[in-house]
Length: 576
Image (cartoon, rainbow, N blue to C red; front, side, top):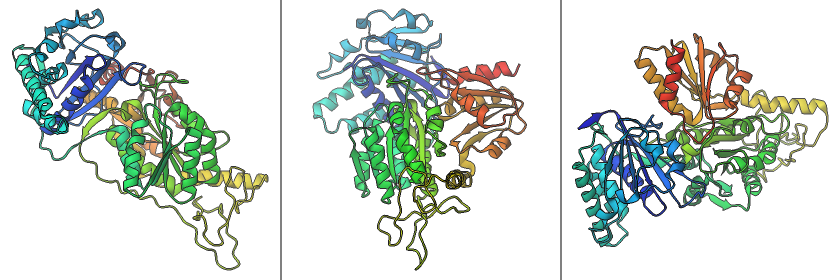
């Protein structure tokens, strides 16, 4: 008995060493090999590495940018501390729980959903195969239950385990086939994958790796950073990718050193990036002000997590918005961008490099844990048409005095490479005259403030400033990682005849009042969706934009993701 739908969501649970993450990664790769798209995230406890965890997957014949409302299959190798993740594992009466009877009874928090239950003795069955492992039994069982060809899994095993001993590969293949055979006999009413689309060479990539690739494509050739969850994977990628393109990676002693190294590298002519999370961004704010005052381009990738302080390092939240927008002292205009999907981490980071270089300003890219540490199967992303071009100064004519901070119509002044004859100047955090000489004159201060803002306001951002979808009377306004769920909810509402549109800014600063007014033309009701406790994005919208209606707000902090069905329910209530 099967249930047809466009996607299947699966949760794999197990204690440390049970191998559920390994099985989940192989399932994603097998899905990609068979022609499907996928989204894979993990929920782990405060230990950050090791220990119990839940692998959360959604497979589909269409691109996937959001978790679904419920999980159709929950498979548990064991139940160790699963209560930590119970709120993140929504089930329904249409769900199926498959568990090893040796692990004990299904916890009440999960059993109460009314899901159908089945037993699969993974540990016992694994022991029938020399070298067999329960997670490979689980992998074969899940593939069978959702209709994923077992041969696709076997193909992935061959690639993943090619460096292992031959008997290890043989044991894994035998366990996968056995798990598939047993699951086929369970006759469970599982939702199965639809036929895949034609495909060629899709990528399986995380948001952190995509951001690193975007930085390389954008022209970054220097990175200094200090490891921090959940941004570290972007640094691991850049540490190996930068040397291959003639760049340099430095693991600094702390966040203060890392951003100042990047400012120095950029001053020397190399586009630079650092990556961090909320606590690190707090430490970097003084140096960001230096980059604003000295007009030195720089990109800071902030992979947001739950706060304040150490907060929840392994969970996602959109609560760094205020510090990214307003956290620098003084009037310090700078760029703030936010990617909207794992694939968009690549596009937005590449764009950030180009904008930082063009405007000679620092740019903060607000990713988050749910984008950075999740892995997706996506179509190959061609390089965006953004090239990092810095307006370089040339040796001035004889008798001409070089003015590094000359007040220009565009606000951008030629920036010399160190050693350019005749282009010596002072670059520091003090306010200055056009020459760079420190100044306390009110006229110099006002001119330089106007200049630093003008160059951002006059920059050409084009249609990339936001994602716009539809022209309905109700507008869902959201940002960052909430965009995927909001888009899916908007499409569901439209399918039911509602007049709904989506507006998701990618460029958060400088604001685009004229563009936003056009995007909201004809709107009579607004729903703002965000993942923060204080409604930071709502306050930003109301403070920076003239909205056509007072917005309703769907806001909550992490770690629970906002799901499409929740947004759809709010829209349905607004439409009555």
